[in-house]
Amino acid sequence: MVFPISDIRAQFPALARPDADSSRTYLDNPAGTQVPASVAKAIADCMLGDFANLGGHFSTSIASEATVVQAHRDMADFLGAQSGEEIIIGQSMTTLTFHMSRSICRDFQPGDEIVITRMDHEGNIGPWLEIAKDKGLEIRWLEFNRDSWQIEPEALQAVLTDRTKLVCLNYASNLTGAINNIAALTEIAQDAGALVYVDAVQLAPHHLVDVQKLGCDFLVCSSYKFFGPHLGILWGKRDVLTGLYPYQGRCTSNELPDRFELGTPQIELLAGLSATVDYFADFGKSAGKTTKREQIAAAYGEYRDYEEPLTNILIDGLQSIPGVEIFGITNPNRVQERVPTVSLRHRSIDPSTIANALAQLGIFVWHGHNYAYEPTRFLGLPIDEGVVRIGLAHYNTEAEVHHVIDAISKLSHNE
Image (cartoon, rainbow, N blue to C red):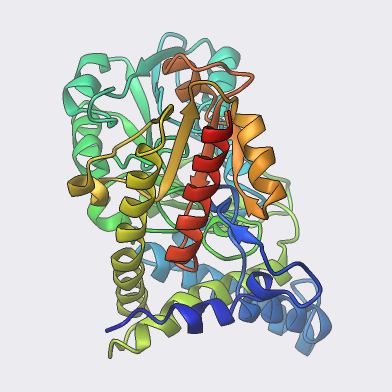
């Protein structure tokens, strides 16, 4: 089947805004993707139609309650969870992690250990550093391999001790794009008696997440990274969530997921979240799949088959430019071990200059450490400069890939 790129792009108004210049090339996707019209419509329909707070006997309150319940069920399908009660939804992944860190670590004792990686976004580092300071916990750092760009099992085994209570892992790096074998790492950590908390923010836009197969205890992601509204989502094993102490007000229900979702939910964004899951499922229906989970899986398969060749074209083209160094997996035979997030530096042009020059051409990329503060330090890169980060999504085209390669090449030759 030929990938229907024109049909897909037509669903994203931002890719062809009539009131904006037509030269926009969105390669800033690791920081946040564009949304299909169906997601924006669902949010607007919710706010302009059946919109009310929860708990009333009247029709709009009942409709809002149904919206909230449906969003949790849809995210359970999206992540492979057993039920919507295992889904906690909040403002952002970072906010949820700070919030949940209090409950997860409440019974830890001084001297107990948390393992965090040199590969993670600050959202899966900062919260654990703070709770460790508050409770007198020890932090043990887990490094990634500079040859494979991944966390090796032997490295994890080396940092575990009988005091390790929690291991926080990165599924896919927002700097290098490298993907870790979370199932294998989880098994090692749990065999040592530790809980496992996984940051899947960068993985979820590109690869299917299956929390049952991974075996971890918690997994977090952000819907605005996979074509949805600005929300953070946490999945947790039901028995683990039930056993945690909830920091809550006196009026909050003790049932899941309410015990960890404080205050009135962002109901309109939850309507958009369901529409985001439906965006994946609708694409997967063309493959003849019947359940929503199967449809989502089919969509991911098609997206990956389209994205991975584009990723290799991008990497190959960038490597052909004198002075460019890529930080991450560059072997085309290992493209399935990375997401299409490609970070680079030029030996004589700083990242800000490159990003600014590309912006003038309508090519949107990021520069700096991009909250990959620890990976930037670990790689010995200047924190104040960081990298140029180019990130593809399944709505990007081969022409756009060549556009950014050509632009950086011309900039390099003019230096």
